[in-house]
Length: 191
Image (cartoon, rainbow, N blue to C red):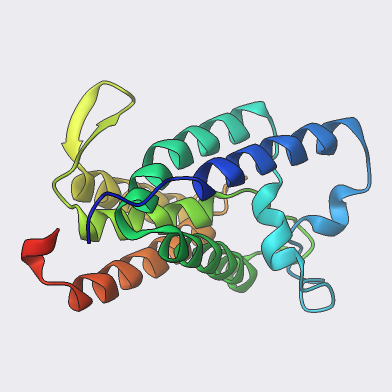
């Protein structure tokens, strides 16, 4: 694998998500696109459509910034097909993780966090010593950052909040599995 793949899908997903967010805040009727566990099997598009919805400006800003940083790096490294596969698979499996653990099956979930955790999980396996900056200040290897985020989500899973920690963790597991799959297909010296 090399870093010569063009990056375009990361930017397309970010642009599409921002446009959806604008319409989501200017119009009504978006509930049918949120992930509602009790209704998801009846309306299966919720597994994907909810990835593009966000709860507020801070939610979308953080998610799109993280997607920009890690998504563009991963897409450049593994190409568009691999990037899109892990993004959407982690997003859908993240929603399934939320569905299994939701205390109220009518409480909706929305956001790209599960998908983004999948991207970060793949990157943590493929480039574990890539230096990332926590809070834009503290430099740490990617693998340490992901372990830290996983611990925070594990702790958060047992603490009542509005965060779908199970979606994060399920997306992360998808990314880690995909990262190991990719590593097994390519000699270590090619990274």
